Image (tube, rainbow, N blue to C red; front, side, top):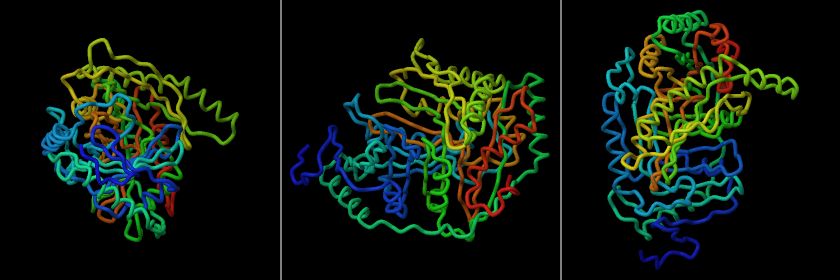
Length: 468
């Protein structure tokens, strides 16, 4: 590829990806500068751990939205983008996202992707939204440096072009030169539960009846909260409050025009390296943190020794081993980490790691579909637990418990599970919080767990006590 004419501060970093380093920026400032652009998405590693990256994308080359019943068609569009844009020589040492496909599957996409599943709920929103981004900003949390990366694509089928890449990079630099000021979120939100305490407890008991009957081993049940955003000046600033209160490694802000998704998720559904290593990291087991070190150590020990939480986690690990075996090489499935303690703002979790090597005849899309929706937010066995959830919960889940992430030009992938998530639509904000139900579950404790998870997202609430 002829790179003459490119400025010296823009260079080609192999396989026709042009890069420009940008110094002296802050991540939130970058996001504020871009948030008004079409298709803006922020894949946000707000925990800022060593080696973490965040990615900001806007102005996609192409996009696809699926209504209920059309999810599979959207998946095929994603496959076609991958076929025409994937790097021919996959770099084995490239880390993170260098451009490609970003989007999400709503939880309700499961009723299109899994045979014989039918929901009793009416769901009017999109079940899938994906966009192809050839240009993005990658922010390195280790040294607070940003890199604008572009492949210089005009369409999904066009060839990488250095002149196009330079134009797109220069436009981003111009946008970043004028940071937008912070906007007050406006009136505090007044969150209201959509079901009563008694109703949720009754659902937990009903799920336990199904367990006693041998239908399922466990199911994840959630309850919903809603608040009006009529007086909210900018939902994006509510997301900034969320990430301040609940920083998480798999957070995201996705602006879809009339709909926005704000997530501070700690949980990964599935990742895939460009070399073909797949990893699922289910979370099962939650306990609050304490500011007192002695008390906090006791809480950690309580969680690590919890028979109920360990049983939940191990059941989901077995489910994920089965899901991975559908698309991974025989004999490669392993569990390098089982029921390990992970700590986040306000909460401790038990997390496990399940890995495998993807078969050569499968790709990232096959892997995503094999694991979706995540076992930790459905139950075991997955098919029947989804049916029980649909029967017992009061409404469709929407984005909650779906998955959001990227598939890169190099074939790598990383998708979260959309927990700790607020969905903004039609001047309303909706969030859901849930927990895994087993025979060992105490219905009152399960209700309290949903409150514990939900309260960290009830930002700007006038009445947290009422919402809880």
